Length: 139
Image 1 (cartoon, rainbow, N blue to C red):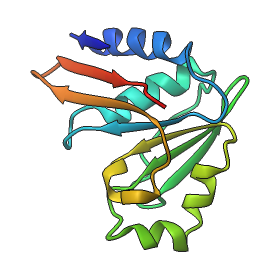
Image 2: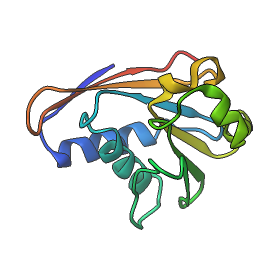
Image 3: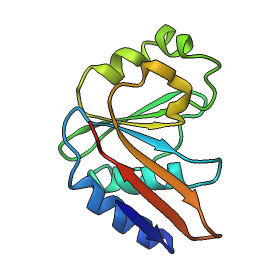
Image 4: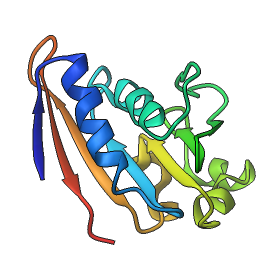
């Protein structure tokens, strides 16, 4: 599926629609360049899942956890990983494979083969406020 967002409001609308399809155990991998909007999308997705507090990227901590209204949310940022073994050392691979709650992963390509089967969203910046979201939900 492809979705074009022309504003933050459009992104929030798309995240709300996408959230309705999320199930316990889903891993959602977000792909995109710096500034593409991975964290912005995650903020809207967490809000749609019932977490109403501030959502920030766990760039330095690697993982933030939130409680949505009916689901636990694990928000990963793998940008600073030098290699997948660092994820193993931190126990992140176990969380990803546990099948509990939902896992949202920014920079999943840095996990290599540790990334389990997942739903994928590719985000491309088309303009200052315009983004293209392409989903791939083959699990």
